[in-house]
Length: 103
Image (cartoon, rainbow, N blue to C red; front, side, top):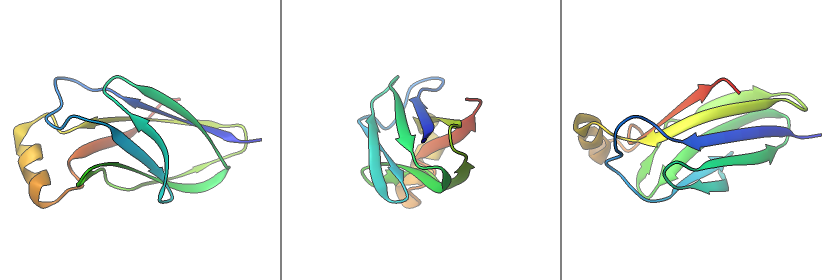
């Protein structure tokens, strides 16, 4: 039996970076999300690492453990405040916010 990973691209305000975001589990692309999209992906139980990419922008890496039959959920969105966007021009990983939410 597999575990379920749910990712929702949503947030407050507008995103200063638009376009598709690619969800990467352990370096492999598992989904692409547009604004207001939700993706559910079946993953193997165990320890995994999630990172979101969009061109040169990325989220910080988020490691998690999930058991057989369990589910885990994340919310993501692009920078929506100009200082964060400006910082992401130099350091790409603040460009996309990624946080775990209740499944």
